[in-house]
Length: 205
Image 1 (cartoon, rainbow, N blue to C red):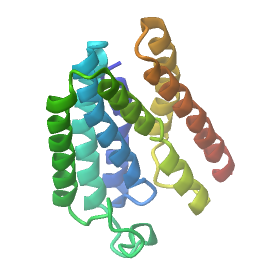
Image 2: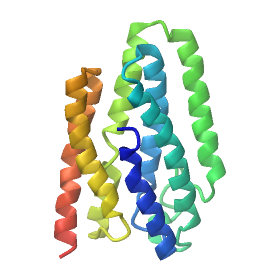
Image 3: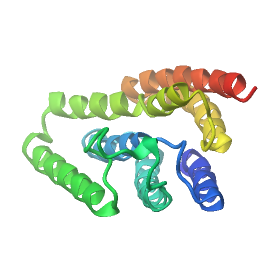
Image 4: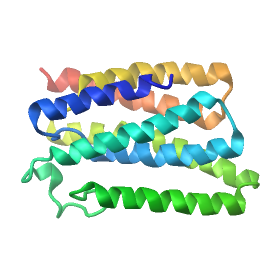
């Protein structure tokens, strides 16, 4: 449960290195996972649910920073996917600004937690924010696949870990009785995973 969700991303890194390109992988995926995992840690501090999910968040943050580094390293300089004119935020050309943003986010959340950490509404808000953001993880990839009419560059291993992992998570959440935000997140992700499966079948023909 802790290691499973990150396995596919190491296959994606291998794909980056093999092809010398990160085209086909959406940077937004890493952004969503980093932000949601950081918020989830503060949610856990306030609600103290399953420790497995806390450790999963820590490992996901470490993994996504590595993915982010590798993705930036193997960008194609003139690829339309990474045209800096398209967007400034979360489209920087080196790792520093990403880490700065994540540090500022963590600092802001820490200050907010110290002030409002004993308030029920604040902890629940963290939960909905974290899991609401996390539920969108597959969406940027699905959108990019649709725009490119291709799944080239995206690791099938990630899709497998997403689909089967999210299916397992949804039922695990129900079985263990974790906060309802997790259950809703799991089923939304599973729905979008199914869309990407259809894209693989359609675009690989």
